[in-house]
Image (tube, rainbow, N blue to C red; front, side):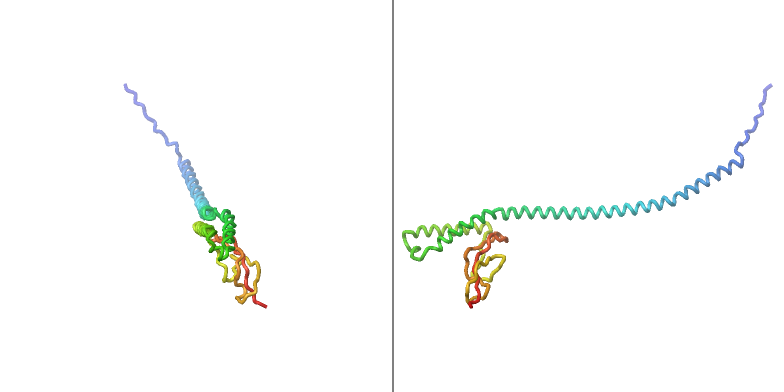
Length: 199
């Protein structure tokens, strides 16, 4: 005889009460998650605003830094250009005394001396030397300041005396020492005498 075992049906252990408790718990968690989502969105907006401010400040700092770098580069380029252009300034100022003495030597010669055959070659040599010196000055941007007959310019002329004259007051009527410019800078002012109204 075969024994037939009667299967006992397994009862569902989940009770209706347990089911509703689990659903309530899940609902509460969902609400909590939804409730937590709102502050997170606001916090994200605040964070985005802060980042935008920081970005704007960083961009402004970058612009300032770039402008400062350009200014530094321009200043450096100008200093280098000036160094090249005016490197000979001290030497040129020193050599002016040679030009002065040469000019005085030629100015002191009378017409008779210039006509004298014995010293004529010397005079010719001095004149040639003066021309060569002026040519060298010109090649290096050194130019003589015009003076006689011009109004006194304090930027280029230095008045040493007043001389009674029929010229307009302040007009240069005598030059004691020539003045020179090196490019657009004053190398040495011209020392001059200016006219004053006769008493």
